[in-house]
Amino acid sequence: MSKNQKTLRVGISTCPNDTFAFAALLEGRIEAPPMEFELDDVEALNEGLMEGRFDVAKASFHAALHLADRYCVLPVGAALGYGVGPLVLKASPSLPDRPRAEDRVLCPGAWTTATLLYRLFVPEAPEPEQVVFSEIMPAMTRGEAEYGVVIHEGRFTYPDQGLEMAMDLGARWEEEMSAPLPLGGILARRSLGQDRIDAITATIRASLEASRADPDSALPEMRRHAQEFDDEVLREHVRLYVNDTTLELGQEGRRALELLEEAHNRQRRDDSRRPGG
Image (cartoon, rainbow, N blue to C red; front, top):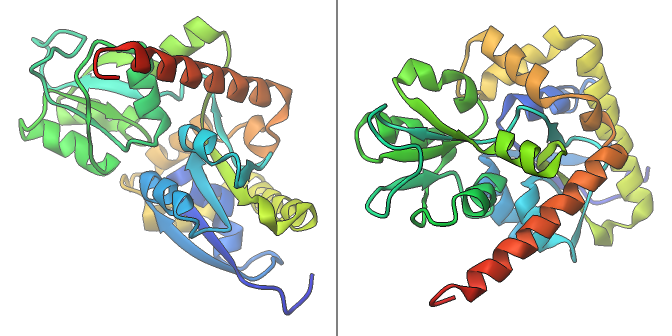
């Protein structure tokens, strides 16, 4: 690759599955094209892609549907599988499993797949308020919201906060679609050209393979950015979110993305038919 090639602006989330996959790249342990990394909350990355700030970045697959004219989904780096979906939590066991009109519901970002699933499967529920994912459970434990849709480490740590699961949105998806849930993936700017996109894909795959070959080598980078610092929680996160489709999206993964697009289009049609839509 040319030494004069422009440095790629790369965005990844601070979640353990991303820092696991990119650890060798972040630490300069493998050869790679010039890259400048930005690590942030996934909704901040979604917004950055909408603004065109990144050449390559992690995105919610909900956001990817809106970005398809400018960005393509890479076949590596996806978070997709079974038992990985967002959870609707409630602050008290006395609350019903479905939010009522008067309840405050928190979601981790308008462009997240979590928000899309909430709207798909709880269409009668109140419009959610969008906050950074790491603020949802603390707000609930302070009594500031009755419900919250959690992602990432929240799947493992919510019982420690005294919160209750009201609904597993991922399980609902699996039941209705008979397919793994596509949460998010790596997008690349189409204008980079196929040769550069292929080279970027190969580089990310090499980084992921390095971590899979020696998982403990990624722990320092994972610890540096995780919301939850317990090593076993980090390992469990990787076991859940990093699988064979992370290495290669494959036919099953592409079919899951098609189903998500169909569901998204259906949800938009339903919204347009509602009063005021």
